[in-house]
Amino acid sequence: MKPVYVLNGPNLNRLGKREPHIYGTTTLAEIEENCRKVVGDRPIIFRQTNSEETLIGLVHEAIDEGAGIVINPAAFTFTSLALLDALKMFEGPVIELHISNIHKREQIYHKSYVSMRADAVIAGLGAYGYEAALVALLRLVRD
Image (tube, rainbow, N blue to C red; front, side):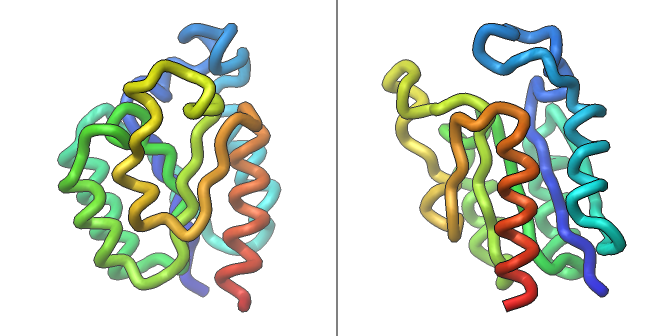
């Protein structure tokens, strides 16, 4: 059984401490623990990086090894054509995820390059968005 990938971009390692009024108090470690419960026996690769190069490398790994991707690209959402190009090579389902509702925030957060490839977008559900994204991804992978 191929793993599902949950990929996290820059500054998400600071969840729980970084702007809790926007991102909540749940840490990335707690989110990972909840994600592992959701997928049950299915393998999951859960990673976070502050490096665009590393994030693209993880997408390349998923291209070769993965069944689906949930990605919270953080700031790379709005800046990285290279990440978009990598995601376009992935043949399985991709769900773009944001903890906050990016459409309620400043204008700079309204244009997502990742959305140009994503099969679905989840935004504004807080840390629970990861669980919702994985439930949807597992259904897409099965179907």
